[in-house]
Length: 462
Length: 96
Image (cartoon, rainbow over all chains, first blue to last red; front, top):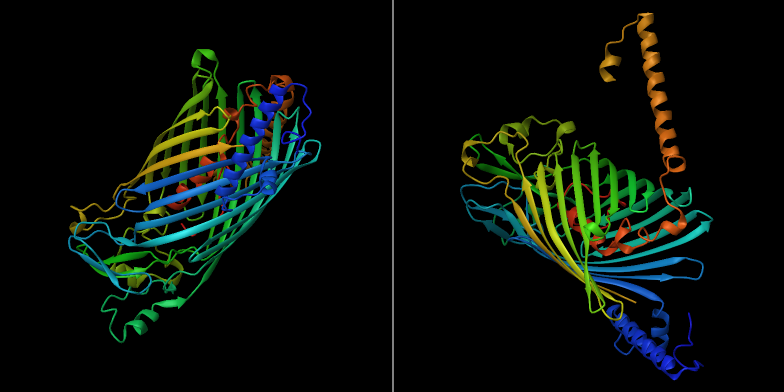
């Protein structure tokens, strides 16, 4: 926090003073820009600029677009301020907006299908041979995070954080605490983290009754509201998530560092997706009915994670290889493997500017939840007992393989700020986890591929 | 291990073998703990403070871009059945 650069700086050399003034002006201008980004008015006064001048900001704009489905835009502004005793305050604002269509869970048919919107207001028709998508998805989310990290004693670092996220139909409040202990000249670190989230979901149209048939008919008729209300059991539901994260970090040598984590996550409450349905088919595969899905009201997830980073020497352009693997398993019988790798390649600096290229590859594979069904059959539906009546046709908890390929290019600007652009391709390939396919579905695409493009611009500034 | 336990009957010898297998697994645990502790202290792993030039670079940070990580976590949390592992997997949005 030094004020001397601005005025009354008694440097012996005039040149020095000029350059310092110039630096201060740039800093002031950037602080004003930061203020503008943070939503304050363009006329940021000196006092505000002074407050912001010791901050370091990371900002990013992300555009995510699925082929014929969801499109999302997301903006993040994250600020870090380091205080005199190495305390670090991080404040992060995230705003995202989502529009487009999302799979409603029903299976493709050889004829057109009509569905009722989740709100109960109106219907939509899916053409023959196409995956049923609900195109009413539209949401804007604002998220605020604050994290305070500080040394507690020699080799002990503590951190606490808060989380607030609000959507039109969703509220999430959370907190976390972490303790890290360094030993052996800070070459090894053990950490313990706890986090807790409390979410409230108030979906448009209310909470559907599991296994109730989706009402389909004339939504302008006099009895419609009453018919629709019969399929509802409430207006809002809650979900609580508690996580424990144990970590171990080890420096191997001057060029290599590794990390190993174990995490346990308990989720309790409403885990069903109120917008998802399941097709009820006859023996030939023709839809007779659509029922609302139901998932268990608890889920216990565990995961192990290992990461290694290696800094190559000049022969390999001083590049940095980052490779990680995660194995996750839960009591829904979902198991997943995630392999993620990036290679940071510094490019020869031109005109004093540092630049880099960072290719990225990610492979993901998951097995299906034990209650996942791509569809159910009329006779099976009647046989289910209350204990085994969980059902979901949400492909996101079905068997799936996904791959991400991407590249990031970044460079430093003359003023020391960093700019980068990232382009990625994401492909999800759901597959049949051994379910019988009735004859009518054999010529149709029951497990459609989902493709998305991810485009991101990032700017880091002081 | 499972196969071993399921074949155990009430013969004293097999009780002994069960006790042995418990002892072996305990020994394995102790060995693992010892390995973990020794990994850092005795085996030459790690660096001196003045050898941290490369480790201190941004590219070598375990999460070199927290913003990218946050955006990716949000995408995959809402499109796949897994989350977390590297950091908390928690809730936070109605996207899943």
